[in-house]
Image (cartoon, rainbow, N blue to C red):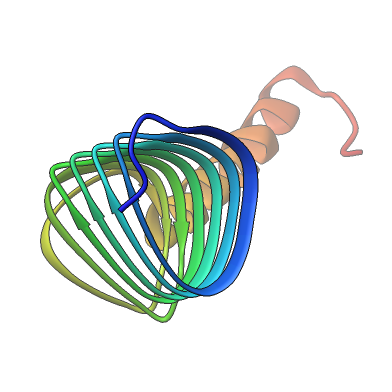
Length: 126
């Protein structure tokens, strides 16, 4: 496991990163532990005690980590925080700020509020 490394990026089949800072990580399977990663793209991702900007993968498992955006087919979050979660199948104790359902709700609410404001204040619809 690489330790105390600052790197621009990795591109490989299998990678284990620990106590490191990585800008971009592309791998078939990635295991990240106590690290900071700006952008992670992998088929299978396991992150423990890390901070990650963007995860794009088929299967993502996040434990005790903070992630900005997670996009994947299956996401499992245990005791972690996610700002934007885009996944059809999710399990675990997920604390997401913006999910796909809430994004649609915000969009519909904005549309309705705009129509009501236009009707009340007599502004034409744009």
